[in-house]
Length: 509
Image 1: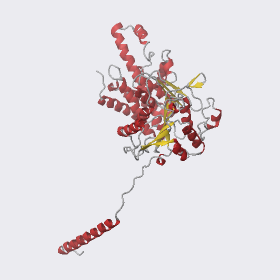
Image 2: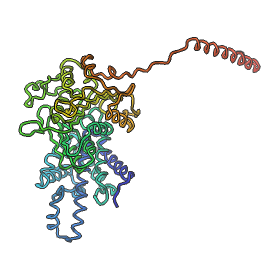
Image 3: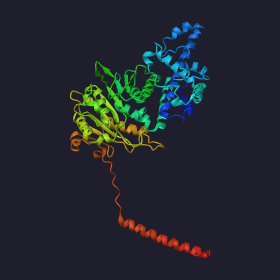
Image 4: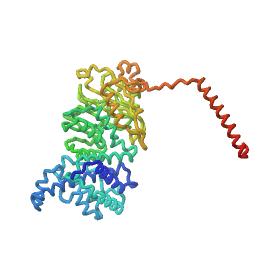
């Protein structure tokens, strides 16, 4: 029986989240997420292997060699002794951390897996004293983790649990880790509702090449892929953090996006998505880059191999426009779309950022500016903006005659949360509707000419263009004075009555 109802999804989520108790208080969530998520992936491929192995056993009995030859065609091949169940059998071993590392290395190095899995487990050390403690404590924690995944409800065989549920559980865990990781969360996670909004603004089409050059754990890329409405697309990502890159690769596999090309590299200084010594081009480029990144590589930007910074070099302490510039340069000429999340300072900061912003506007690439509420991210409480750049507005593109910018002020539409604010579906739908219809909505959105933006010195601060000022109701001073006098008279009367009651009771007023 397939488990697809919501209760079962919640149940799996809950079991997995409880497994994190093994590490809470010992290491930071931004670190222990790697151990939990690798184990989820290992359990998933082990259960698929076991399920298919048992099917072949029904045909071939105990002819292990013949079954294994058949199993060589699996998405992932598990060498003998390397499955979760082999690790479970050895859970009491004194060197269990070392044995887990060896099993993962055997899986990664198997010739059938190497193209997909090479390097995926290399950054995650189950025998790390620094992370997991000295031998006795480390062994106890790893044994607890192994036992948690032995829960019968975590039987992830495809005959029992749909792939969607496993992928959803993976993203659920990433989201939970982000809420506990504070500022480090921004390195690997974009909140689900913001990912959904970016995907709808990106409007990917069948056949598109889609790229996230700062892809973190890959959830934004997956959300954009899901927006296509078919499997006719190709996914590309780049991630600078090795552990997070590994999570992104596993995230793709758990969502059946095996063909996604996710590169481990520094996007700004050594991009790896390159063809014939030129940057690859994409129909859709989306990203939630690190905000105002310091030491991003400004010192070598003028000599950039790919000449990305011809509009100017952003300040060395703020890499926002470095990422935006890269994204625009890898969008297909005359048709590529770019959707990027950035801090509000990008709207109005001057100096080199102001000059880059001016050139982008003069090139007629900027399509939409959306202001969002504060405190939407676990990593920062500041309000953020979303920019949409559209290369079809270039000369020769189908939208070359669109010579204005839509401003949307969504900063007041959110639901207060305990730790952070949240965008509801109704807020997303409102933004997307106004965006698609390019509507002027009083106190919410306005289409602004490039001439007006020029008159404002290319400052994009939203209140300059969308007036959200609410006039206060005029106060009738005479009426207020009359009301005060009436209240005073009533108070005088009440005090008189109270004095009478006190007197009757023999109490001095």
